[in-house]
Image (cartoon, rainbow over all chains, first blue to last red; front, side, top):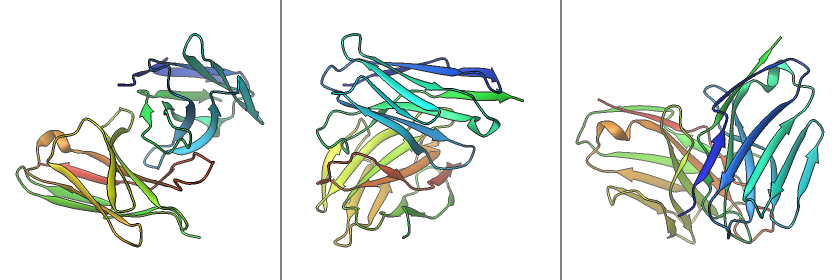
Length: 114
Length: 114
């Protein structure tokens, strides 16, 4: 089955600097890659996603890049703010509709230092 | 428009007991997926229900079973509880026939097995 690895497990960044989280996946058939943000005690919330026919997607301060050949994708957060502090999970899915099962990484705890 | 709701919020059981968790999907959604999130880990897929049938199953034993009702709500049942079943159980809903892939998560049910 699919295996998703995520690095680093913890990341501390000065406010205003950029943060990068990386994931690799094993199943070349995976075609949908969402990123979820989970604040303490709250539900995971989708912050950005990318499909395999796209190499990069950006939404304000957040961007995701995908390298299908290398089977890895990354989350980039620029101009970090204290409210960006949370646990971030990458995930992979293989489905044209993407609402098949998600295989998650182990998470990255991001701390923004004021 | 209510999002995904789950009940109960917290639950304490003892080993060997049985538990039922409930999920109501976001309005308009027809697919419900269940995930188990152990402390400090990413969510792990248990199974997915669509049209009242189990469509996909993750690597969980038969002690984990589910049901989907005609109104698309769902239940997760766990029999013969083990200490290792202690986790946050998340429900996610989606619309299977849509071209948009996002799975919306509920707030979860925190299950503690003593």
